[in-house]
Length: 467
Image (cartoon, rainbow, N blue to C red; front, side):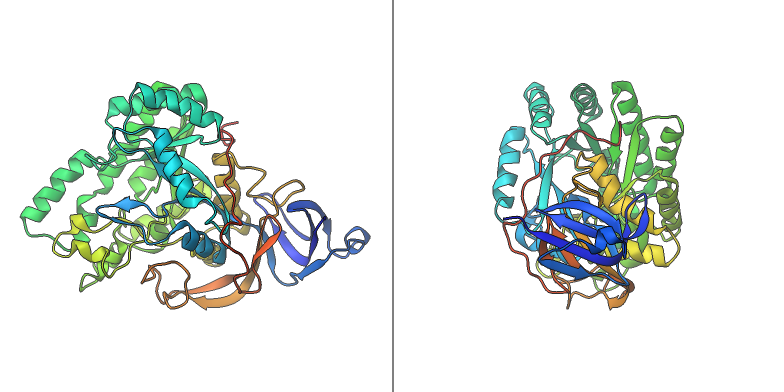
């Protein structure tokens, strides 16, 4: 049984085009586009017709950095794959790439299997995995080759968190050399964790225990230093590099310099760095704990440089690093010691709307919005053109977006499984109205009509951003 849907009368926006067009969907894929009102479009018949007059028709968002059910510091992220992917859909995101974790002493395969077990049958939207490499050894390096062949084509390493995820420069270099050979992409958490641990110890000894000190000890210079070092190691290895959650202007400068030299170096930032700052970390009565994440929030003046990096393509992607911990009972683990506050913030539901606000505020164009939120992450992580665009043959992951609707962000109305919103009370222009995932309605005129298990695991090709 063939199923057909026509979306009529909207402004179709992709990374490259804006056209008033009708969209024909057949059996879960985009079948055709035709200019609205033309005889070709008028001739289409379908069981389901969606009127998008006055709305945008955009590709479903691709959030390439989430942590559902992630264990951290004796607790775990509050969103399951079921609640987290449902919230993502509410926010216009139709694909996530989450992080499977290798335990020190364990195999990559064990970590990947554990994450498959968490996600399978529970997701409202499609998903893929990156692999966190915590223990570089001969077996791990061989496993990297096998994982690339089966569609896990990116590997995250940490220059931070000694004793947990930390890799030293030698381990990083070995993994990068392997990636240079097998086509994988190394994703780097770039902060000098060894130096940060010294500063944490010294701050606590001085009695500086409040959340704001989390930002003060994780210095922008130590993010820049680690970014520089990661770039040089990648250059030695002849490998591409993707730096995650860039928050500091000094780190953006390192990326820009490398890209000016023609190196295959890429950067992602997150909405929290574009809209929040150390002012939030300094909120009284331990409220600042809500904003503890790593890399940390920076002083406000960094925001303009991040937006500039997005305009100039020195930063290519905006992901969320969605890793929510409830204020009550989780963030509170760090009362009296900021170093024990679980690191992470909720955001998977807010990304598309916040970036649209960036369009409204004049920071980026509409097409750039779609590029950094949909097309570039899909290209970067081997999902394009199946995901990230509206074109014949692509999956019918489509969002009907009302650019004029006004909303106020609040924990009262969000769908993430967390007891606060990082953007509580923020007024935004623009809102998701209807979401299709592979042609099926997941959100229908602001009602959830999807279900756990609709989302399927999506193997990825190697990075198409390098081709």
